[in-house]
Image (tube, rainbow, N blue to C red; front, side, top):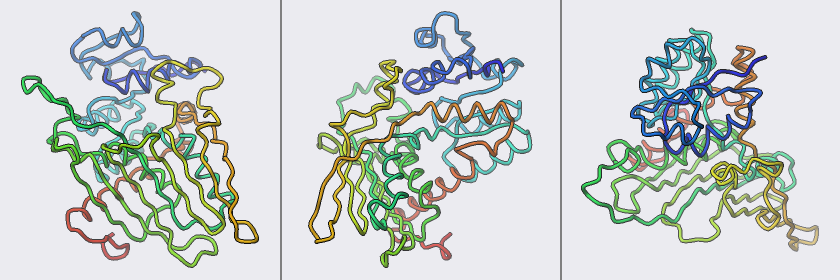
Length: 364
């Protein structure tokens, strides 16, 4: 079948670092024809090449009958209305929104319009997460009791020129905080693995004095796993002033051992540098995590665990399959799964506001 004729809305970081290099690397599946750039500053052509069609209005995208898929990469607060218009115009879509209620509405609209709606949960294809999931499911470590996921940075505040307008990411009135940035990935990963938690507790704070809640710490409690008698405790956290190198990513603790993983997945940097060769997503041995296993005599043995190969392209391969079949049941990332994750975030924020644990069956 011919490639899916595709438009990308927006010319920010997501265009250059994610969507364009991923779509461009799958020419048998996608043909990027159009980019929406409200004010033509030449960014779209610089990133995508001189032959890309640049439009300045959403109406031009929706009015193009040749376009099949729209990738929404505009400011987060604009997503809901843009996605809604795309679905009403019967364009397949791949975005989402801050609100679980809005996400549910969009999911219902997609079904009514008989179009595909997915979400860019690319971090389900991080090599470290795939490795964590494999270790848990294999039983190598025994029954899991602790799962900790970190997405930290060291980015102290910079002095800014007050005459320069804030971007939406720096504006506390527009930015909903780290929990809706990194948290939408780490919490999604946890909910994808373990489902709806029994308890949710969250805290959020501003660690750089910008007014944006750039840190969060979310704790989820689940029933005991396997033969464990203790509940499973899940922690997802982000801190923007984390002076650790390399940054901690995962900690697993289980009945027969544990696993610790440092280093950020390299795919982001590979995409930025257009390193899309045969070794894309392959992590070098020096960055592998280390498992500690309990021996029969009670002593410990350690071993390096090869990191599973990550590949964000798998998400786009899957979306193409669903679009070509016009079958949402083929989607790896469903709207329903993301609605669940958004509800957990909303519970964590309510918990932070009220300073109490949210309990399943009572609060949700």
